[in-house]
Image (cartoon, rainbow, N blue to C red; front, side, top):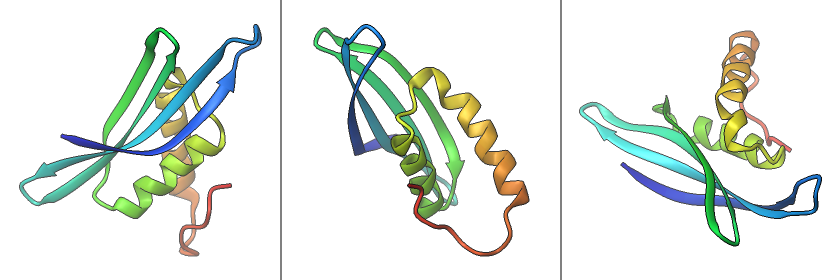
Length: 104
């Protein structure tokens, strides 16, 4: 499995503490091709605080990058990743064939 950093965002919590959120595209090579996923890491000056990974989102790189962009735009935290992915899958079931647009 390989990962590529795509987005990075500085955020502050309610106490004013600064964190950096790292949004990466994860690539896994399978028998029939590549499978794409996402990873979110939350770090502070002391190192990694949290990490979340969904390794098998799609065989379509563009679709996975779109989901990753939505996470970055909303400053999604690692603890939120699974719930946000469930919401995304639910939205996909209702999408028509208009295509993928910019997330933010």
